[in-house]
Length: 323
Image (cartoon, rainbow, N blue to C red; front, side, top):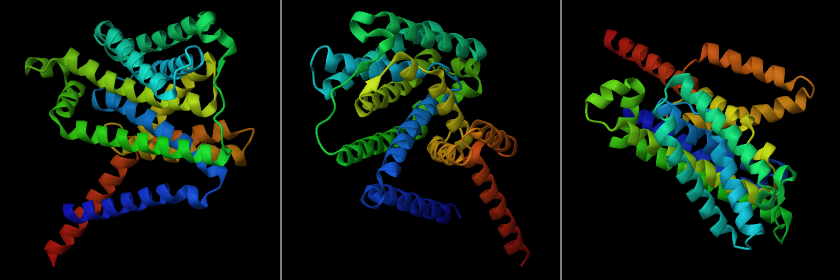
């Protein structure tokens, strides 16, 4: 039964991957841009899942790493005249280092204290960036030079770049979930004190989880800055980005590999269609939909599907035994 389910799941994932790989060949510019945004938020949701879903530490300030990645890339390219890959490397390095420095004091907090502290860090960093006008141009934002070439080709390049980062994030999460690191994360989520008594260095593993999350968040932040060619503090340090990645993860299923990815696709595409159908009330309709999903599927899509499949298998086995 498990082998059949694995084959079925592998076939579905392979088919979806093939469709996404070929999508730019038959989809218009609108869909290419929309799916690129979906891939970006899938990475953000999966990154948040590593520290919140697996380790049990819900960060309300993960957007700070997105903003650091975006601004560092812009500053290196515009102010220093360095190529994109140098800027994005510096952005991920700075964001990861910033995360590690913050991790030692902040990850000693728990629950809502940790959540509020991370939110405060994000807001403080945004204000710092806004006031460094000589470097970041302040609240006016900073513009990058436009990429030469056909706009359709440029969109396709960023499409495949974001897609590749999403696949890389999925593979990293899959590796973590099957590794002793993932077992340590889950032990901390279940009972941190018990994990410590078993010899797990909880502080080190929590920092590790947050650092991996920060790395991928900063990576797509830098790519997003180059893609849009303009950023400002209100845009890349917005708490709404954190809220969206949290909702996507919770909808799909925290603590699972594919849950946040599924949540990102469902939420972002539904948001786009609901916005188009209900221009003035799209937020209300989307909010009601999220409430219904949370009520009837509190563990997210993945857990709901797993339980339904398990129940179906159980009844099938019962019928076979009766015969």
